[in-house]
Image (cartoon, rainbow, N blue to C red; front, side, top):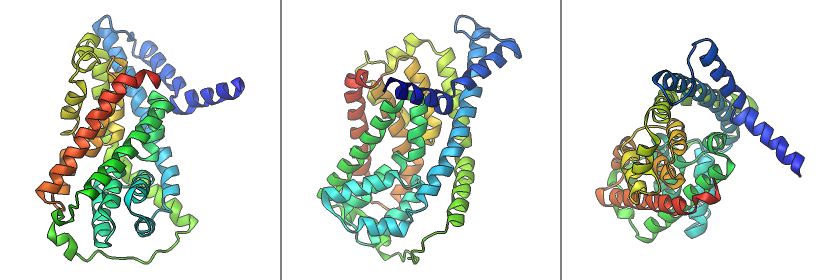
Length: 343
């Protein structure tokens, strides 16, 4: 059993954490750029920032491209029509659970989730099903789970998936129980959402789809990845650990609330938030606070709220935002208390 554990540990270091790449970039910074890597003087901080930026940028973009291709090929089986058909079979807690789980294995960002949400409403799917899907779809996907594991380990990645799915189920159930159908914008029910006949894609079509997903997602997120890595490098090398711990450490009872306030207005992909989260963890920020920040960015960015405003009336939108905000803040507090079990 020990040898099996060591084997997977080596695979994790080589292919996910890419420790060899970190060592290579450190060698380049030290020997080619002639910069030290430390936090004791300005040149060491510059060297550390450069090493962090180059290493994280290459690692995230390389992993992102490979993982998006693999999981898009797998996910090409889950067409919107097939997803709708699967969700129509269940309601209540079972329907909410299936909606949340399907949201994690379908490659929809919030931009593409909203048209799917409209088609679900038009098809008469229960509110708990549609909203569980809507919450989980931008929250969690397979590629981001593996990337999370490369930075924080599998325990943290699995916890992120579990709490994201649970929040989607609970949020969908609450909205379903409140019977808020009347607060969907009236025009949604009058729209004619095109139905396409479900055709099983060929292997060639699935490969082409996976290539297109890599291209489309890369074009959409690369700038946020570089921005996130840049912010992470700045936090990691220039902001004193004592300052981060004072503001966002476990000693500050309001840390998860502050993380939500900072994260929600941001517009970034989960891939862009990872290097920021990595730097915050290294500076002593509680894992719960980091989870709150990441969930706030991915689920409730201002552009997402603006788009949702087009299909929800103010009361439903307020309840939707309120449920998720309270949920991610509570998650922050719970995991700040029990985070030592997964770190």
